[in-house]
Amino acid sequence: MEALKGLKVIELGQLIAGPFAGKTLAEFGADVIKIEPQEAGDPLRKWRMLRDGTSVWWEVQSRNKRSVALDLRSSEGQSVVLDLAREADILIENFKPGTLEKWGLGWDTLHALNPRLIMLRISGYGQTGPYRHKPGFGVLGEAMGGLRHLTGEPGRVPVRCGISIGDTLSALHGVIGVLTALYHRDARGGEGQVIDVALYESVFNVMESLLPEYDAFGAVRERSGSALPGIAPTNAYRCADDKYALIAGNGDSIFKRLMAAIGRPDLERDPALARNDGRVARVEEIDAAIEAWTVTKPLDEVLGVLDQANVPAGKVYAVDDIVNDPQYQAREMIVETTTSDGSVLKVPGIIPKLSATPGRIAHPAPRLGQHNAEVVSARGWPVRG
Image (cartoon, rainbow, N blue to C red; front, side, top):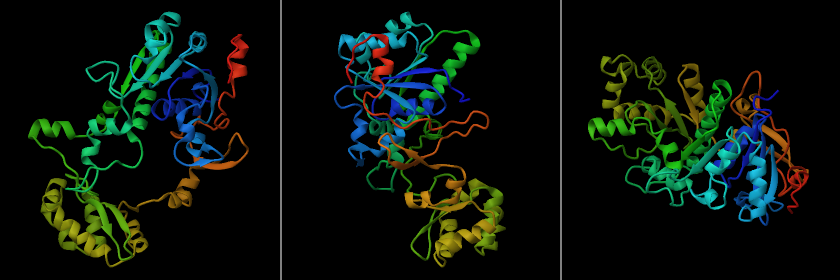
């Protein structure tokens, strides 16, 4: 049996942050009812590349969910949500703060209706503070959280990482909050509660030593390209075929094995390089020595030598590398699903991997309003969709 089977979830969010949280809960058995606008549905249905009019991203983000098409601005739609909320365990939303209150669906109303309800609220800046009413997207949260300032090459324009990582980090923090609140409710006899997740705070939470280094030393961390400042050696090194080897030789014993593998016994035995702080002081010398070796060999040979030496190393994976990689295949991270129109699509597998109650793809992403009859009309609400 799936770990979350029996949990009832109402997903009011759109696009990425709220729906990714709902996706994660649904993969482990929760019954997620996704509420979508009647006319066009979640805008994600039309984001990025479409096949037969529907985004293939949608097939990942909304698998295992049921779709109900409602107009949340109407009293009819609001009444349906209130009715569903009476029996729900969790409600997820990622609207601008104040939106649900305007629709009569705020926390005070829902908590009075169902004291056991847990409400996950994801927004750009959180439900409180001077920025709470500003619209916020992942790119802004990534910038405000400190990530954008560190991403890219020194002296160049700060770049985004290529995906909406701020939204996904917020979703994962939200799932942690939901599971914690469920434990408090079910194991400790508590009531439901609000989980208030801000995009910028989710990014800031993973920024490692950024703040304490500034407080202790006045250090403002800057962009460093492919290197990891303060930890050495770890970088991308050019090979003879103009590909790059990613080498992490920053462990003390690993560094010695790396230097032996590249034929630099002088650096291997240098007592000044025995610890990370000594290596950081001479990181340019060390990086130059490593690349002087990698540039003479193609990438595959470099990785073969370092594998034999038990030094962590790898390549930069593009999606075609991912699809054909035996590790991905062995751990079922590339799986095939049949979409609601009958076509077959490769999609990412499910993580985390639980030994006793693993997640699964129970059914494909729904058509817009596909479950109105069984969810809404069955309750006596004549809502179209």
